[in-house]
Image 1 (tube, one colour):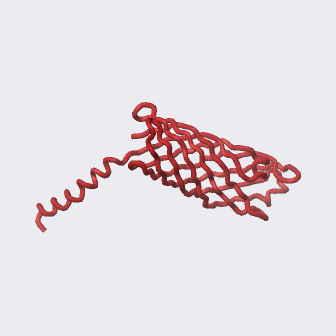
Image 2 (tube, rainbow, N blue to C red):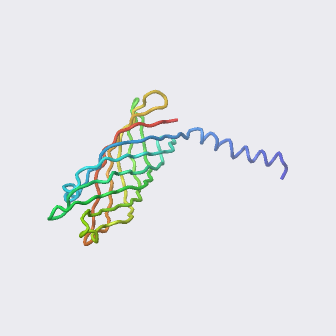
Image 3 (cartoon, rainbow, N blue to C red):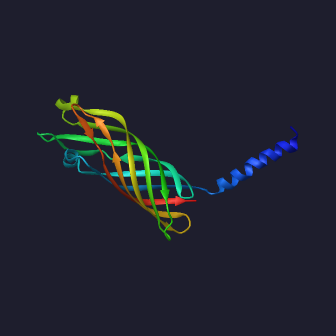
Length: 189
């Protein structure tokens, strides 16, 4: 094949792809908020928890694909009939895909994805340490929210997500599913 034909083929493939890549944008930010358990026993024992959720996304038109990290704080509470002191920690990466629409200056969105979480429930009393639970488990998350542009690059964001996570406890399943309510900022370019 001649050099001219080879260059012709290269440009025939690169030009359409370059115009497609021109519509691709990057978004990143951090959200902070609270997580609330669905399970009554965990809700009564630990209450809600503060969490931080940094995230990045590639946006192409109304579709976005991204990932984030659920940084949950260690929650302290009292568990069981004797109200034994315990701690619970849940953290892990997530991947998601979503759709957003432009309604005036506001961008409402919905997303769904999977999370790969590590969790640990430990009792603080030495006599109960045999009952500590630690592991990794996959869960799913669905949610939605609003992005509000501030200027050309910055955005405020508000999200409301449901996280489903079921793990093995000592003698039963530990249902750590619940709702996250988050707010924060982002960059978009």
